[in-house]
Length: 80
Image (cartoon, rainbow, N blue to C red; front, side, top):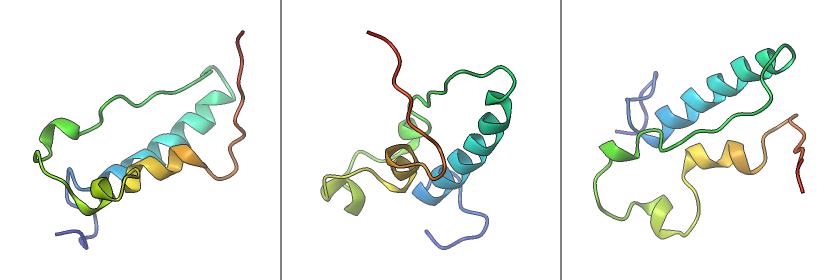
């Protein structure tokens, strides 16, 4: 199930791949006019209501890791 190329839609690998491409595009657009980005519930509505190994481990799945420490992307905190 999890070793297809391209990844099967709605798997963690698919979400990770899509988000990596999403980041590449937004990084290019950020130079012109994009100031931030936010992903909201990408495909969680298509998942079963059960504990998967990544969820039971207490950490984010594969798609969550680019947000925790994205390579070559500085974290900029603005505000109060």
